Length: 174
Image (cartoon, rainbow, N blue to C red; front, side):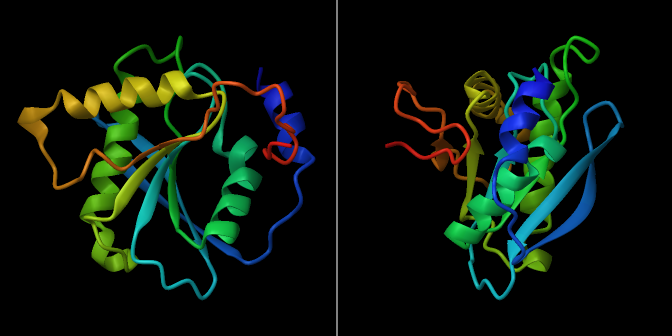
């Protein structure tokens, strides 16, 4: 599955106006999870998006989705924090969801140093990952004991229901 996803990503055009910084967040079990902060050069966006790559929490990597992230950030101007969550079956539930939550908590906690407003954070789930997003949203809504200042109504599902007219290279519909 990673090879198929990588083949789509390799055909996307290169984007040069996006800066990428690397960080890490500590997950529930003490493991450091890689985070990548994508920001368009010169962008004054105040909001941000937590990005969960595709793969159903069993495949996919940030390297595969790097061009997708760069393209989305350059076209929208909105910065994104991507989480390299651990994958099942090597890391079964709750590890992948908890890694994503650690990324969200890190983004909220570091909002001021990143130059964003912590109350303007959305979550995006890319195609191939609707199950990732659904699991993560359910986990967010079921955490009263770990409440963070985050509006969980800002969710963006980019996994279309009907993809018959979608160009998987560009991600556009025609």
